[in-house]
Length: 427
Image (tube, rainbow, N blue to C red; front, side, top):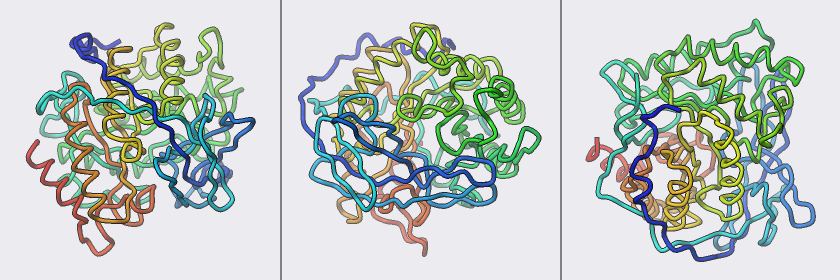
């Protein structure tokens, strides 16, 4: 494990008091399709059996549009019922009501509230990736607020003026880079984004190496052990200054379809995840290696399942440098809830935490602004939150319908105006 990622002060962070509160569910899903040699989704699919979430999937990465070697199915409708949970609370029992929207269902979990999280002024992180004039190299020493390069679009020309870090929404995923076979590489969109980041001093993050969706359909359990290391090696040799990598995305609730060929469950229960990080550690030694999951700082069942699973993986020696908490439902679960879970993860693992896919899906401008003003300072001031990535900002290019911050005509919503001033004040 890279020593600069360890949080030496974690033992001094006190845990907040945890109080239970229930939640309902939201978000519709669609099943994946295979088009042009890759698995794609409009979102994901979820079902329940006997009160337990089955085959649950993320509210995070899937988008409603793809091009080239990909296609999507399904819509992105949303319902809310009081205090709601994000789609797909996997692994643990669903303890609240089930709601439906259109032809989809999802289950909620039991949420947790806390009395508040640890904060410390404008604390900056001790781990992460540094920026040096021309691009990103080495460990990040400063906190950042970033955003995404939208799927199948050029990087917005003014991205660097607005954001300090870049995740690619989709085009750097394996299914987009190698859609049709082991000799077919589609690097151009990644080249563009990476070069833009280097030229503009923006931290570049790889999202992601392994996931359940948007993966090459030609990769299977019989050949993944041959081609996965090549995929990782080619990526990190081509982009040596990549600062952060979501090595495995949503491994517990959306496990990669070819995982059996990477070790499957094995002795730890998650040997395939360990193998993924070992490959990444071998070929990408300078990057922060992140395990990225949803619902883990919002809802109790998902948080607890994540802690138990990650403990087994860490005990087996996986070279994980940081935890990525997507954060799609922080605005629903409550900021204090999120801070309490961040404290708990910090105390348990001592790893830096990144909020990797934050959004605030509210149509009312003033409500969105109020949540932005509440959430961003609280996360920023937490001593173990090392960066925040808001998941999209252009209208029509956000995963959730009302999470956008800039209209198609270029008008900023109040939350964007406030956020831009916050970023400027903390650069």
